[in-house]
Length: 362
Ligand code: FNR
Image (cartoon, rainbow, N blue to C red; front, side, top):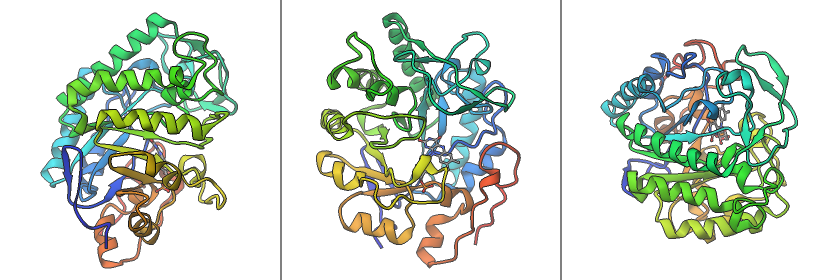
């Protein structure tokens, strides 16, 4: 019963190792203000050792889907404050996931800023949701200038400060799943010829700079990072993921972070399919030995698989996504070996209370 034992991640002490994975639910308003329903939704799940919030955009251009929340405006902070207060009132802890989607977006989602931005002007394969929830072709993104990268760093700093005002316990830098920071890391999407492109050192530079920028705000023990080596979601690819992520994880060791959060690529399309890829590389096995701090693993875990990963030393804690959507009291159910509610994929994204706050507790 490792999962139900306490653990300390940096400066944050948790009652158990059953973490709630970041889960986009697309129920915020047009201004990126979380819905009042989110107060109950997160409070219901406060028994997680740690809740990692749904991905939350740091700026208007950081938005890539309709109805996702932000953290850059005052009304957004006020709404998040009610959520963190409700989680804390239930004895829970919650980090904010800092998000910029980069090219995984559509210009209709940021009418004042135009085209999505990216390290390089390379159009993703696949389809995108516009602001009116219609499926459209991706546009070719605009490549960020060096001045705009400076501006981007200041937006991460602003968002990290806003997260503090909103009462979070820490922040997780979203550098996974083919979004902006992952687009900088991987050479399928980063073909820059300046100091942010080319060599692995250059491609990792932006992620490391942003960590350097936000650690003084939060303290390193309240900053985590999420990576998805070998993931292919959002048309992301690298010519040598092992070398790239080994370099990056080694570099992360200098920061003394709260945790490193790795996604297992066997959970295809970042949780979009129920099928697990049996022959996918095992992130925990490959990269755990390289990291000096605490490792959180996610992706296709059930209780037994999670216990095994911790017992085998592949992870210190496990983040559960889809099971936490349908089981607000997941740690208690694990403790009692109770049956789990099945999740309903149709209500994952958008809509109302249905499939959001109405899953029963024991
Ligand atoms: C996700 N995932 C995800 N990841 C992330 O870093 N930020 C996010 O906002 C989201 N949003 C999201 C929404 C939904 C509905 C799903 C199903 C998934 C990925 C998620 O955190 C997790 O890595 C995967 O779901 C795999 O874990 P499970 O579901 O197999 O436990």
